[in-house]
Length: 112
Image (cartoon, rainbow, N blue to C red; front, side, top):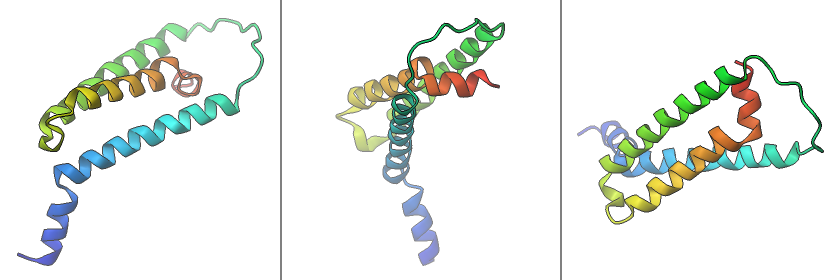
């Protein structure tokens, strides 16, 4: 085998890609937390926007789709066979914070 082919097969293996996907999710969550706490201001009365329902629907569909994706990743990876419940709970919790509760994502996805 070619050394570059060996490197490519190693990098695209389940153990490496699973770690990369989890690290990106955790990093994205920390960035959302940082932006939420950095931008914390006293509560003011806001005018309700007419597109609020559409952005909630988009965030809900995105949440369901990403939970399905992370569930498929967790069940297709053999490296985490004793810890699937832990990873599924962690992923669902982080995704729910990012997409449903984070003010940062509410502003970003609401602007679409």
